[in-house]
Amino acid sequence: MSPYTPATIECNGETFKPYLSENQLQERVKELGAQLTRDYEDKRPIFIGVLNGAYIFLSDLMRHVQMPCEVDFLKLSSYGDEKVSSGQVTSLKEIDADIKGRHVVLVEDIVDTGLSMKYLLEQLRTKEPASLATVSLLHKKDATHYDVQLDYVGFKIPTLFVLGYGLDYAQEGRNLAQIYILDE
Image (cartoon, rainbow, N blue to C red; front, side, top):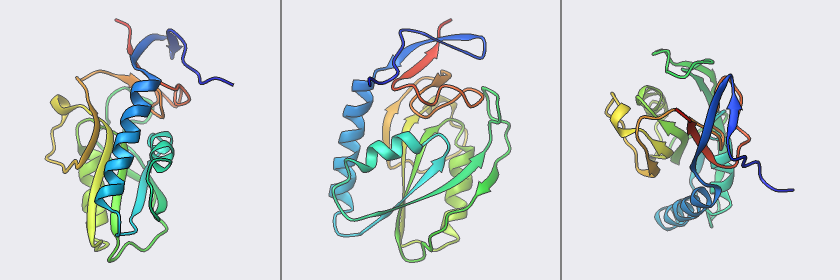
């Protein structure tokens, strides 16, 4: 079975075209995994993925992290079914692990305005981790309104609406093996 990488994709009445290929994504994820392995070699970190968007990225990233570690998840909502943030962050699922004194690596699919990342960092710091680092597959630097810590970034991208590789539009498109943008 081959990955789902159509030449274009229709999603919620709009057409999207490829932006970052499956090969580009996999190569960068491999590089990030190697860098995290070097940086956390003897620390036994816990990786916390932000659902739903980061699950594919985190899954692939974990295949390239070459050390003992743990994984947990939390879930937020700030977009609903829209293409832009609502400006409100709602926590839908908390982590299960006790992270006090632990080395935590927060894994996000995309940082846009930075609102969700700011919220997450504030919440996780109250749990007193030994360290707290962030990994984001994508960063829309020009759209970021909040000063947030981004330690590892896969790709800096312009302010585009993206779809695929875990990123959705009204819950559709997450299963695409590459990242698409609106074909305007």
